[in-house]
Image 1: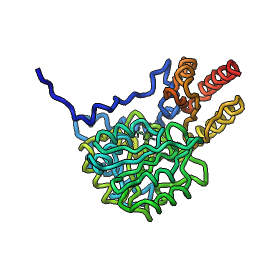
Image 2: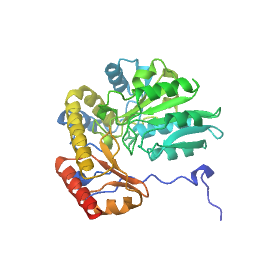
Image 3: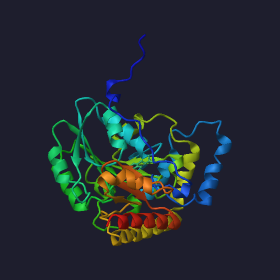
Image 4: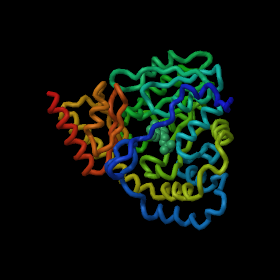
Amino acid sequence: MTTPRARQALDGIPVYRPGKAALSDDHKLSSNENPFPPLPGVMERAAAELGRMNRYPDAGMTDLYEALSARFGLPVDHFAAGTGSVAVLFALLSAHLEPGDEIVYAWRSFEAYPIAADLTGATTVRVPLRPDATHDLDAMAAAVTERTKVVLVCTPNNPTGPVVTAEALTGFLASVRDDVLVVVDEAYVEFVRDPLAASGLALLAEHPNVVVLRTFSKAYGLAGLRVGYAIARPEVAVAIRKATPPFAVTDLSQAAAVASLQSHDELDRRVDAIVEARVAMVDALRAQGWDVPDTEANFVWLPLGDDALDFAAACDPVSVRPFAGEGVRVSIGSPEVNAQLLSIAGAWRSARR
Ligand code: PMP
């Protein structure tokens, strides 16, 4: 008996593995979520859409694009939204890559990149991070060939934390062809405080080949509602819109995203608290003797090498994200669980002195 067979490109692609479930939501430091509950005003605006669930959502995402346009001072045709920035990335890559093309990205970086890239059938070129866990943009520029169509730059980099500097990204853009799409994944941009950090948005006006990816999942705390977006030149934004399934983002999610943009003062104060906790966490871990790379995101990276899985097991009941043979990523959570994690990390270090 023969059975239908999926494309060969899928053979080497793993099913995405999410962060492990935890004892409680508070104990989950494995998915870089926002520890704060939704703002009541945001919940009310979303809930108001529940009574209309017999209707399809606004496929044109009019209110969302207008709110984004107002927030960033760019016309509505510069945006393309989807069910999380991961879905926007899938649409972007499927719109621009086919077998024979090449895509370049740093590794280790976001787990979804290989899946989104390999699905297109394009060839992947991975450029190792530097020893300090930063992007090696010189090596990435050298890896670009005449077949390269897309380069992914994750800043801050998930899972290691450092940003790409404005100087390095500007130099990189000057050295690659204008027809290479440079995707700047800024999922964690709201947590960045380094004045030298690159801003993809600032580079967009001069570099039409830049695409910025952003999300409501992290700083805005809407991970469960799945809304992300690209900011790009209209030609790129329209390609993403074409490659996105229609009616993907529910009205409930669109309403929550719009309400979040309108409540950004309050949400930004929460982000400040998370940044403060991040700085304290890095200081405390370094004081314990951990070699933690600089991080500008809502997580820290512990380069544990072969001990990654054992450390993650030792963190129980706190759930963290191990990368076997490399390290462990720990999200910033509530003050209590951050303290719990620090005490586990301290005990681990002491036992190995
Ligand atoms: N980019 C990066 C670098 C991420 O870490 C994540 C989430 N882990 C995403 C994109 C996707 O986020 P979402 O789909 O929730 O918008």
